[in-house]
Amino acid sequence: MSTEIETKMTDHSMVTFWGGSERGICAQITDQRPDSENHGYIQLTMTEAAALAEALGAFVRTEALRRQGLLKDEIERLKNIEKTVFNEVAELPQEFFGFGLMSVKMIDKFCPIVKYGE
Image 1: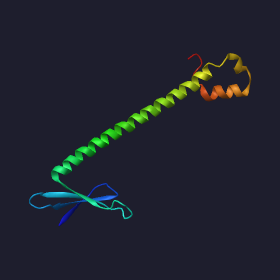
Image 2: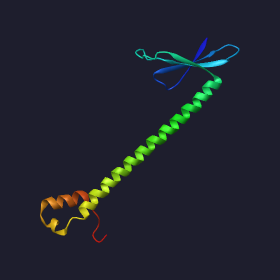
Image 3: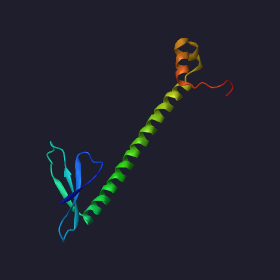
Image 4: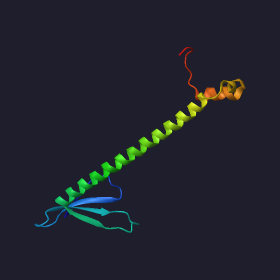
């Protein structure tokens, strides 16, 4: 007889069962996807489940840190693009700003609005 364990997994189910006097209580994880080529299950003793939990935790930590690094790199890349655009507008020659509507629109779009004298 087995007992279903509630998890947040969507494609797999988990149960515990008596694995006999040598194995004790075991856990079984079963693939529930009907179209999966890997439809099957794994059975783990308590020691194996603990080792798997530790390995999965390490995987999650490593992947989370990798993704955090990618996010930080993307934020830095976008900041550099932003700095480049603002610097290019700031470095335009003063004569350019005398040419009418286009220059005023560029200044209005890229330059912050601040109180006079700040």
